[in-house]
Each structure stands twice: as C-alpha cells, then as structure tokens.
Image 1 (tube, rainbow, N blue to C red):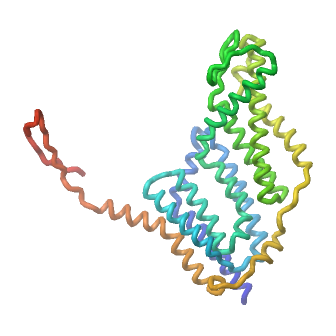
Image 2: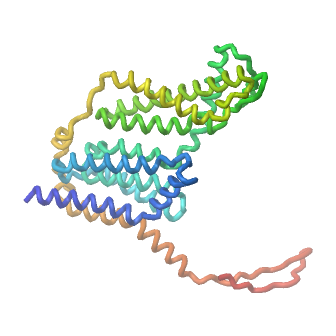
Image 3: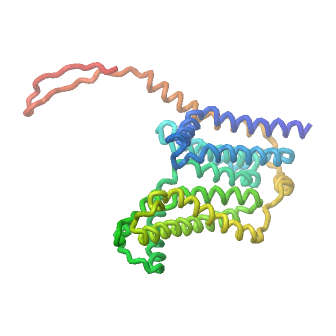
Amino acid sequence: MKQAFEDYYNSTVLVLALLLLGLNYDVLQDLFHKWYAQDLTGPYSHGLLVACIVAYIVYKKIVQLRPGLSANPSYAGLIFLAGSVFVLFLSLISGVNFLQHIALLSALFFIIWFAYSFNIARQFILPVILLSLTFPIWDGAEYFLQVITIHTTSFLLDLTGVPFYRDGPFFHFASGVIEIAPECAGYQQMLVSMIIGLLFSYQHHLRIVDIIKTLFYLSVAAIVINTIRIIVIMVVGYYTKMESSLITKHLLLGWIIYGIGIFIFLYFYSGLKFKPASSIETICADNRKTDYLSRHPVFVQLILVVLVMLPSLSDYAISRHINDQPVQPVRLHFVSDTWQKSSSDIPVD
C-alpha cells in the first residue's frame, strides 16, 4: 500500500512539472526561436542538441531515483519555489524573455527540492546548468573574454619576436592590421567547453565541487587555445604579408585548433583520480525523515498545484482585465504662441 502511494506521489510530481511547462508554452516557444535563429547558425544553435541531451540525462536520473523516492518535502524548497514562481509571474507580465527562461527552469528545479529535499534535487543540478548554457544570457561575457584575449595575445606575441603595435583591439603589423573582435574572443568555444565539462562530469559521476573545478579548468583551457589560434593567424599573416588563405578561413582554423587542444586537455585530465559522488541507493536511504509535510503529502500536492498554475492564470487574468477595459477618447488641445486655437476629441480604438 505504501509503495503504491509513493508511486502515485512521484507520478503526481512529474505530471505537475510537465503541467508547468505546458502552461508556459510561450516561454518554450520563444526559447526555441532563439535556438533556431539564423537557420541554426546563430550563437545558440547548439540549444536543440543540448536540450535533447538534457532530456536524456533527466530521464536516466528519474529511472534511477524513482524506486527509492518517498515524500520528503522541504520547507526551504517551498520558499525558493514560491520565489521562483513570483519571479516567473513578474517576467510574464513584464515580457522580459531571458528572465522567463531562468525563472521557469528554476521553478522546475525547486519543485523537486520542495517535493523530495535538496539531497534529491542536487542530482539534477548538472542538467539544469547544462540547459542554462543554451539561454541567450551569456552575451555579456564577450566583452570580458575580448579584454582577456587581447592582453594574453599581446603578452604571448611579444615572446615570438614578431614586431607589432597594439591600439586597443587592433594589432598593427608591417603589412596589415588584425583586429580581435568580440566574436573572435572565444565566446562560442567557452560555451562548448562548459558543455563538454558537464558531460564529462556526468560520465564520471563527479561531485559538485569537482564539477566546478572541471568547468574552471576547461574555461581556462578554452581561453588559452583560442589565444594560440589568434597568435598562429597573426604569425602566418605577418610572414605571408597577409596573403595566406588562413587569414580569411580563420573560423575553420579556430575550430580545428580548438578540437585538437581540447582533446589533448581531456586526455590528460581524465587520467586524474576523482572521488565519485554518492550512489543513488545511499542518497535515497538518507532522504527519509518524518515531519508535518511528510505526513501530509496530499497537502504538498495541493501546494504544488497552486504554485504551478498561479503564474499563468494570474497573467491571463490581468491581461484579460486590461483588454476588457474601455478606451476613453483622448482630447487634444492645439496651442500656439500660448493661445489656444482649437481642440477636438479623437476616439482611439
């Protein structure tokens, strides 16, 4: 009987999470358009592939965890869930797209936290971070990467003995000028490196602290590899008087150098010894406790229903109320040289 109820509870939580996605279909549609921008050649075109990978990882986690899951609600998770739902509501009525994406993803994570405790929810931190790398919220990193790349390139290029003069992002050589534009600062390589790092962490069952270290090391590796690419282009351009085809084909060269460099890095990095994360059985065994919410799982389900439906229904009600308001005629007064010449009532539809 207990197992049957736990299965019912787990299924209810899953259905409510899917209901949250369904009620916010417009948010998902907007995100899909960002991924599909410029016929899958935009900076976030990897989103479609990553979304499929995340769906697979989440499915595997659910299959592994479900036999040992039991109702273990968390008060802290409830607070965070209510906060994310409120942010989702504000983003819906204000139309801030990137905030809608973040709030929706956070709400899904906090549903798990509230229903099962953080001990279970942290098993989904990796797919949450992985999916967040497909959100168009990282464009601001281009400027910082450009600054880092410019100074790193200038320092390393001095070691090659190639004469040059730098004026901001422009590197002046005897036969031409090469600019390190924001698009050349390794922004896409950085995102790809973090995605690779998260998939590497998933494959090796790394702890959260080791995941953070892996992402940091791969980010540094991406910057170094991209700097090497730029220096190769500059050196080749200097000795060929900017006539080499590598100058115009530098994008393809960049991905070739990046692929070789990241393979070498992962080859040596994978040889390190990592302490594995706790097993699924241990996590589920440590997740059982008794409190008021645990003894009243139906109350937990009712709270989830309210919080899942509240943002969309509130947004719909407010929008409907605004649209149903009659529009009053606007009276315009035409004034010239401080004298009122004429006035008219103009109805506005």
